[in-house]
Image 1 (cartoon, rainbow, N blue to C red):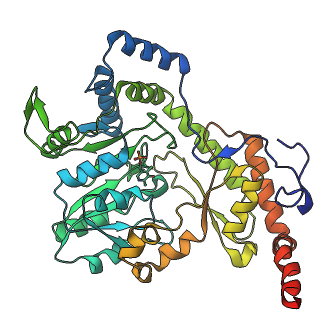
Image 2 (image 1 turned 180 degrees about the vertical axis):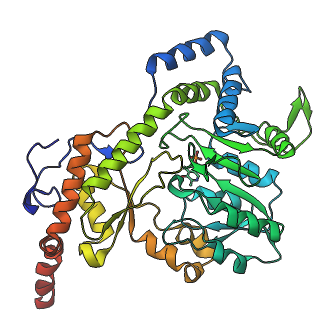
Image 3 (image 1 turned 90 degrees about the horizontal axis):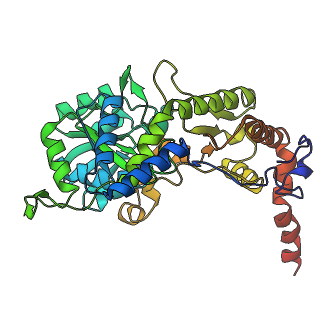
Length: 414
Ligand SMILES: *Cc1c(COP(=O)(O)O)cnc(C)c1O
């Protein structure tokens, strides 16, 4: 890390300075629990030679998650995308399903993969979650369900969604990939709707290398999902259902069991980082940190900024570019929105007309590094860079435009 205080725009790496950080700072750098405990368990599972197929560690992991969430069933899977695909099929969804476009593309792909049409619904500008008041106009005779996404771990308006689903006889699922360890009205996320899906991917604050889980209180649905994630096997040589391979392996399960022992520490680190970002970014005009409701349980795993270009003068994209040059790998989350990705943009070229808030936020939000891989000094530096950029925005903007400005007259002259 450069030790000098950044004071002049000249020191920015995008112009002539050296990057503020020698090592790249990633969004979603994995949190790793106690290595010794992990290696002991890996040795144990190797001794046992039980590597997958509902092994003892997977069973223990499922029980731990179910206890933590306060839900009857947890079915661990190889990843959240396959978990979504399976729960969508097990819940009997067909035709059309209403989902936000402002999410990771897997939410939409899990539907389209089985030729169910994702009908994109707009989000609320404050919560960034699916807007219940926009849902009913998207319901058609082909609609069979709603999938809410608890974006950044902030819960959807679950009461409103539950009410709509009940009144229209629709299934309600939640992509809770961001929301492990979070609550809604004091109750842990994971027990709402017909089922919810967690992701334990390496980039999530709690990981099993790759992994995910379906959690549900519905016995029948749980039984179906267990069959489906294991080729439909009900016993040796006995297949009673269409299935696929969604199983979690034992190494992933021990990564999870070990991570669970450090879960409170991961959350405490995320919380500390969040508080620091909040403090150090507080009075920068046009830079607004997305906040969490501290009366709820929360994992604080995303540091999301909303950039209001008319105040900062530099755009979100320019700020991301400047930070990337400093080796702060800030990301545009979620950009450009599922409806602007293939195959959806070809299938539904006009979807954006019904998604004004989604279109607005995809140009304004960005995500900053946090987690156990980032320390207080690094966060200070990141905030300092952002402050420098906004305070000197007109100078920076002019310099960013320079190559174009000098080229244009020559081009015209020749
Ligand atoms: C990460 C993520 C997924 C996919 O999870 P995998 O475990 O990587 O398949 C799905 N939805 C959202 C919102 C995500 O962030």
